[in-house]
Length: 159
Image (cartoon, rainbow, N blue to C red; front, top):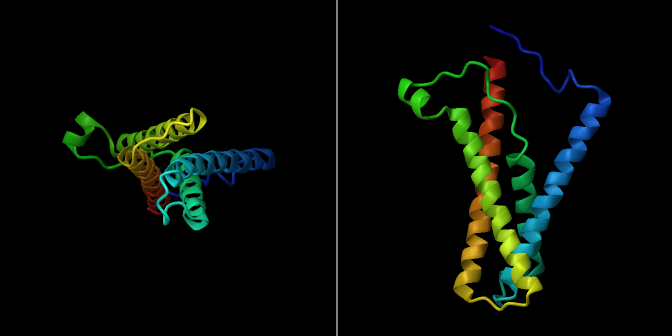
């Protein structure tokens, strides 16, 4: 059994605080993206989606996506891979791609929402629904990538 040093325990106090501030900033950015998309969706006058609770839920979900999905722990040093997977991409690459695609999708939906709000464009219900769905899919991809990366890091330190 190989014992690895936990990188968090080897950091200085300043480095730990910097990391906490960085992750908090990412969560705030994700929450802002959720707020912008929620504001655009709320303009469609759908009662359920325009409520304060729904807007808060989108902000929290967006914050979780950016918090978990952007700052991924590094992959284990020697992951077990199948020969075909080594040729195509490693599992670590797939998790990073999932995170990157989710971040891009969520951020793009937020930019489109902000643009529509600022330009006072009244989009169709279908278009607004697509923006909301693409944001939700992107945030879900970020959360999934973050969970997978952290589970992978936890199992590699225990084995």
